[in-house]
Image: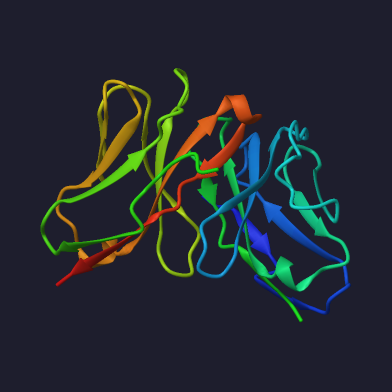
Length: 113
Length: 111
């Protein structure tokens, strides 16, 4: 079956612009996660959704970051007024439920110039 | 504030067993240990997970110490395709259900 998909695969944007990243989880997976990975670094957890609800937003790096999930499926991660330090690969994962194994998408490579 | 600790790098000869350690000394009783790996430029791939007992699947074995403060991922017969960064992840409910990946161990399988 189809895995987790993310779009766009690459995004180059100018500093100060807003960007929206999309994640399509595996059908039927109730939990969805966002991570980011800076060049040569490990994965940094950002936020997770159980259904449409995100109980803990403290992992988001700043108030310029927001995420939503609608219909228990697609999720969008929005970064407002992008900064150069936002440049990273943003990874999305989904799992059947919390504490089940996570399946990752290919990521969106964001470059802020 | 590291939640898991892993050696930054390891080498292993092709065909030999690769043993990758992870320390998770603050793990709580009902939290699982998961292992993932990430091959260059790809998303992480699930390998195995466990709670208390040792686990084995087609990819690897997971050995968890009796006190659950550490674990070891074993790749029984490493191949060149196993060269990747291996992440140990636990879920810490006392930090609001965040999911922390370890620092990762960069495993290089040598021909």
